View 1 (tube, rainbow, N blue to C red):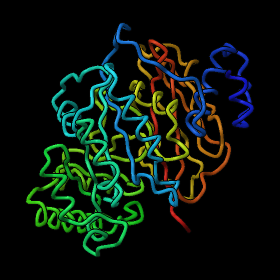
View 2: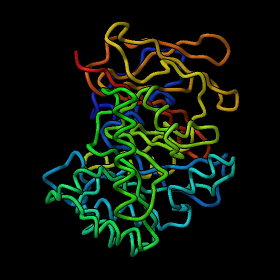
View 3: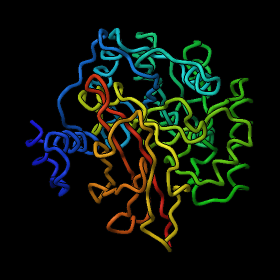
Length: 369
């Protein structure tokens, strides 16, 4: 099975001869799921012993809009996701509950999942909302206010957003006014967009959102500080990963789902994933300057995670990232090539208990010259 996955993804086997062959194949098969959506299904069993808590946050945009495959999920795929989430092992909670548990150091139920949807497209109201309401699943919509104010044909109206909020199942979050490329702008522009979007959301719904999502998943250290200073309780990117104890509340991960990355096998992989509790991650800023590109990348793993040789990291467009031990629990390495202009993603995984995977991701951004 894993050899077939390798041939379909074009990923070559790593040259590290010390790594057991079975572990290498498992890691590369997971890579295929990260970038291509193939792999064996993970079927959770309630009888398995549950490890430390973690929460998976899912991210959608459009529903059944086949003309936009990069941001839309097929309705058959979405319905399969909902059927899977109705199974006993999962607990679907409001996004705010994940954030409050993280803030207060409170443990969440095993296999906790939260659902988010970005941009307030009309198909949320016409397609996703009836299905989520029937399932009884809470969700959060992150709204860029200008598109709603302008009344674009494929966007929801304020009256529809109020209907969602009044249902008690839906919360709204801030997504800036103009869907801003925040990493390309300084703190002043970021702060202005946040405040203007908050004002519009409060004027139209009577509620002041406490949650924020970075458009395109892009942010910088300076922008992250602005979001925290503006009083939000948490902010979310578009990098894959699982929220666990001690995670930074203003750079939280989400698993993005669309037609290409929405098959049931990948979905099961995501909703059964566990946190990978890395520390001392470099580079600290995910905005990569052109001077010094490619940057040195590194992380530290706790002893509880197991042997360092089991970690596998993959950088989009470059394949496996070679990380070498630096000290007892530290790994560092530099990509072979400079990161391209725009967005790049790093995914690191480690085998976990019960056939599940520990998962850590980052999204990097290289500004245009």
